[in-house]
Image (cartoon, rainbow, N blue to C red; front, side, top):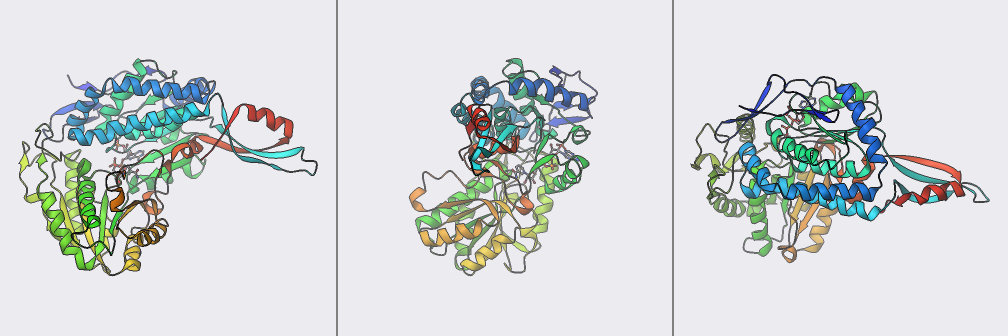
Length: 522
Ligand code: NAP
């Protein structure tokens, strides 16, 4: 019988309803699980989460909540083999690619457990020092941050069912805010299993963690003004959510992480044969193929000096040809599948659109698949070369969510920066060079349109954390079409789950408040 992914609401697993969606193995086509349609009773379930989950969490201190996060990490570490098996079957990923999601999620949860422990027995946070409001200094103002009274609704994308849950839930739960997660249907199984494991172990209070699988109908209608929404997904869905009355009229705070046309840039000094050139090519190939290119941070636009474009293409093509694509159950497979046949079709359509202004420099479609056939969602990596850097439009507009990048030749540094800005706001830009001054100038210029700038010289070849990897101590999010959101960044993430209020009061009242607060040091 097909596994049914029940909703967990009101502190209880809800009965299975008629299956409305099925989850499949993207390599074999096998049906793996099913979800129901629209969830019933969401307003009541959300009220339960706020009242029961919120109240229980907010009687605890940051250190107590941090201890729960640490316990959840310990529990899930012991169950990782099951998570890898689910990831392989449902996302079609190799072990290394599953690790990006699973280990990344647990690492981020553990990171917030440590940060929270350092906040100690406090129940609120102070933002900055008090300012004096009266001549006798007795009347002062202190910005105080208290956990929000509502819940946090997470609507997540299909590409990170584990990390996508925990990178959002870690700062929310640490802040004392109950969570309702709605994973993308196509890969909801792993999120569901992790939630089920944590629920079964009774780590969090009832109502602190709920899950809705399948239909998103009614989720935004059940939000009230003190809730928050954190969305990760496409710009089209984001636009719909932004215009929902809960967001547009009731001012529900919303964080949006959307599409992104990230840039990776080779410095003018990095000629073929130099260490910076080699590093660039290695990292370009790695970052465009990890998780079959289904990372929001993958480099879609590769900016290189015009004079070396063909050398980059040749070196990258040699490495791409060595990547075996196919069924992740075959140990020879280095790159698995896209998450579904729909995503495969969408990526192929996007590729066709990009080739209207680009040439194919390496064609992954010509590669044989390992233990997979043409009905699978396996897609070889493809490297494009934009024919006219100044006339091209689609390369800055259309994100192919698969293993596809486009080389764009630039004439000088100013031209490179100008091209990078044409993405209208992205999550990450990376720069590879051995010229520190060139990199510093590029970093400052790229920072105006990118949430993160990753700068790599040969000195940090072995130690840099990777263009595409999101580190919990650095912010994740980008301006403009990337959604305008901001997540992570250490303790900065807690601000989203707290309400800031200026408390204007006699100094002795502020002193009492300060005894229950930790300073938000960021
Ligand atoms: P999507 O189609 O926009 O779906 C994202 C989520 O929104 C899913 O959970 C989906 O549920 C839900 N949803 C769809 N329509 C909705 C509606 N009307 N109301 C409420 N929820 C709704 O995106 P995706 O295809 O899963 O993800 C791929 C995209 O995510 C890519 O463009 C990628 O760049 C982006 N992404 C961005 C980041 C980032 O951090 N910036 C990270 C990862 C991915 P169903 O699955 O049930 O339809």
